Length: 528
Image (cartoon, rainbow, N blue to C red; front, side, top):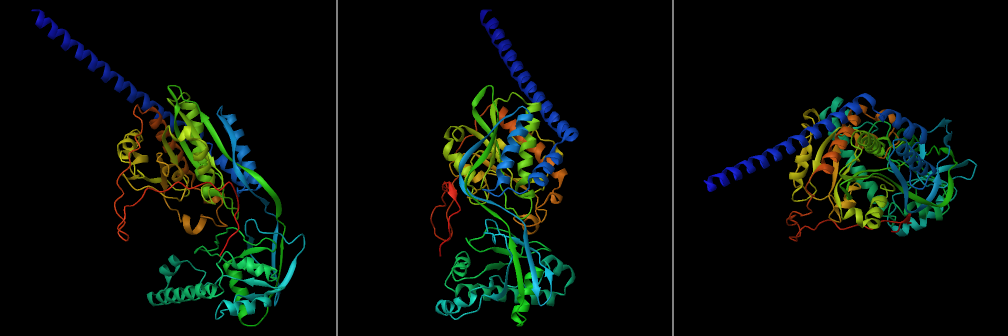
C-alpha cells in the first residue's frame, strides 16, 4: 500500500512539474508574442525614420571622418538617445586629419565657356581662395619609367588627366535593353581593350595609382583631374585625394570625356578650378555608444551595429545612413516596449569604417569585457533594401540560435530571408567582421540590392531620395525582434567554430580571419 501511495505521489509530482514547465513555456511564448506585436504596432503607427533621416541627411549631411559634420552627427545621436531616455556617449577611438568641404567651381573657359560638373575629392587641398586657370595634359603612353621621368617637366603649370576616357556613358543594362548583340559585344571588347591599355599606360610610369598624383604635384602640376565612373547614369565614386598642395577633383564622365577629346584633338582647352575646402589640423574622432541596461544578466550583451561615417560627395544616405537609422529606430522601439531587458543592449555607431573598420576595431581592442560576454551582434551596412540574408559566419551552432530567434518574427517578414548555416566567417566588408575576427558572434543583416553598388555606394548620388522607407521600417522591426529574442534566450551563444576546410589552391587549411588593428591616426600617406 505504501508503495502504491509513493508511486501515486511520484506520479502526481511529475505531472505537477510538467504542468509548471508547460505553463512557464506558454507564458514565455505569450510574453514574446506580446513584445513582437508591440514592436510592429509602434513602428507602424509612430515611425520616426523619415524625421530622423531628414535631420541627419539633409540637416547635417555626409559624415566624412575628421569633418565637423561627423562630430555634429555624433552629438546629434547622443541628444536623440537622451530624448528617448537612453544613456549614450561619444567615445574617442582615435585622431584624423581635420577637413571641411567648401564651394567648388570648375569651368571650361576655352574653346567655349561651360560650367563643368565635378567634385573635389575628400581631404583635397584648396586653391587658397582664388581660381587657378591652366591648360590640360593627359598622362602619355610612354615607353617606360625613364621616358616618364623625361616627360614629367611638361606638367608644370598645367592640369593633368589621369583617368581613362570611358567609351560610353550608358550602363550595361541600357545597352542590353536596346543594342543589338553585335553592337554590345563590340562595345565590351573595345572597353576591355581600352581598360587593359590604360592600366599598362599607368604601370609604365613606374608609380602606383596612389603615388602618381603625388609625383605630378611635386613636378609642378596645378591640379589632378580624374573620373571614377560608377557604371550608371550620372554617378561617380568619390574617394580621397593623395595630393597635399594642389587640388584633386573628379569630373563627371560627360564633361571629362569632352575635355579629353578636346585635348586629344589639339584644341587645348583651358579650365578654371577654385576649391575652398579647409584644413583643420588633427582632430579627435568618436564612436557613439548607447545602452539599455540589462536586469538579470547586465554583464552580458546584445549589440546593434552600424557605421556612422560616410564618404561625402552625396549625403551618405544608403551607406550608411540607412543602417544608422535602422539601429536608432530599433533602440527607440526597444526602450518603449522592452525597457528592462534580461541582457544589456548596446548599440555601436562606428567611426571610420570606410578607412578600414577603425572605429569598431578600436572598440574590440578597448572593451574586452563586452566582447567576451557578447551574446550576439547584428550589423547592417549594405543599402536601403529589406533584409533578406543572414549567415551564421562560421559559428557551429549559429543555425540553432538564429532559427530560434527568427521563429518569433512574423512570417511576412521572415519568409523572404535566406539563412546560410553555419556559413563562413566574414573577413572584412563591414564592422561585424571586427567581432568575428576575435571569435565573437557578429552577424551581417544583408539587404536587397536596389542598384546599390552602381548608384549609391560611395557615389555622388547617395542621397535621401534613394531611401526606401517601407524597407527601412521592416529592417528596424526585424532588428528589434532579433535583439529582443537574443536578450531573452536562456542559453548563451556558444563560440564553437566550424572546420573551414582546405584551400583548393594551396592545399592548406583555411584559417579563421585574423584580427585587424585599428588605425588610430590617419590618413597614412601612400607608397609605391
